[in-house]
Image (cartoon, rainbow, N blue to C red; front, top):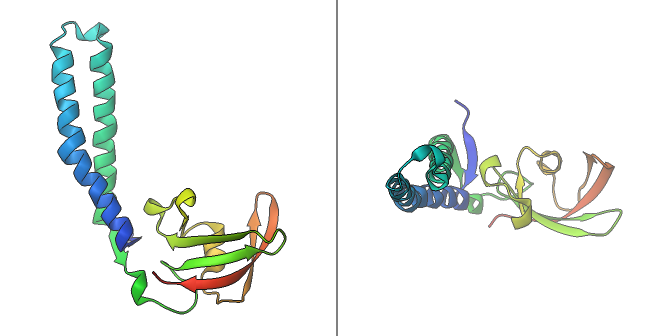
Length: 156
């Protein structure tokens, strides 16, 4: 079974979501289903069908989170240094547009571009891995090749 790299913060976030689903969401949906059952005929009961659909989603997400956490390989980025590797927070500039960006390279389950967390398996992250400050990297994107210069590497 393949291990999934996660930061400590990523593991804690997923663990908190799992706890919330098990202790709050699951009991609430069970109550909602019981309430909807009391309304009689289940074949035409929209509340019941909606609650069952939500229960299915919650149970699926619980299974997904349990699988991720059971395969987690938690890496503490604060103990790392040097060139870009998993957990690094990298600031780089687009050499064509001078647009500056900062991303932390994280595992797939915790990746979220809007929050500045870049999937380790993405083309950009793969291009950055192993590079140092001042290095230029070229990344193939749907819009063509893009060049970036690494400005800083931090492990926080």
